[in-house]
Amino acid sequence: MALAHVTAILNQKGGVGKTTTAINLGACVAGEGRRVLVIDMDPQANCTSGLGIEGADGQTIYNVLCDSAAMADAVRATAAERLFVVPSTIDLAGAEVELVTAIARESRLREALRPVLAGYDYILLDTPPSLGLLTVNCLTGANWVLIPIQCEYYALQGLAQLGRTVQLVERHLNPGLKLMGVLLTMFDGRTKLSREVADRVREQFGARVFQTVIPRSVRLSEAPSYGQPIIAYDASSKGAEAYAQLAKEVIRIGDETQGTGVADPGN
Image (cartoon, rainbow, N blue to C red; front, top):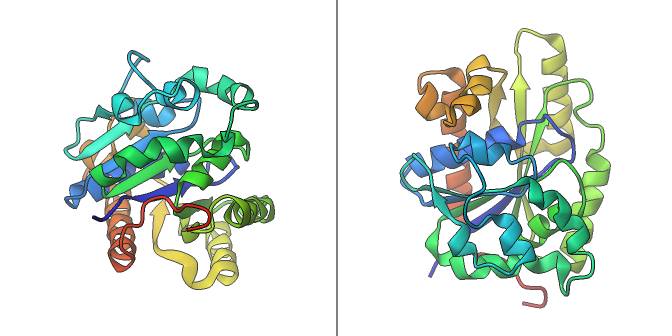
């Protein structure tokens, strides 16, 4: 039985498009007929509200990680067919401290994912803007990493540290972890800076850069305030077209590498 491809959308910098990508890539992959679960691992819970889930009634990812609640009990349907979300809450901000003394603290998410892997084609993890224990849980629980990089001045700053963290997790906790690709976001083709940053990223990462480029878009910025992915808010916008194209790239990668779920150290 094929298991879900679990992808951590990762960059310790804030404002690079992680949440926008989690919401809209998830919605577009679901629109291609795949079952998708988005897990909001950020205490700011922007992914949760961006998918139309308000309030913290019921189980959240905090309860899963800190109270050993079942992942399936925290899953909620969204307005989009085949798209589901495990919401976050501000309580998750305390999880880093609460998990410090927990047994197997780095693999709490991985263990919680196991019972639901067969129920989805893709699981997307919206990571917090840090390289703390929540992010390590995401990397330990994933088999893919997708790195959004904004086409702005400080785009490549911190990528070396990010790379070291991924390598450490791969070496010690999750040998099955792989880079799915680097995604250029907030691209404005009218500016020399955007073009130069895009060129530098392609020089550094080569074929690992997605062909799809996400444009800077007012419509993409507006959609979360209505609790909708861009394909529901404005399906004809350039942002919607870009994420639809990205979804096709991601599905092609997934189809070429059969779902393996979460890799076990030692397997």
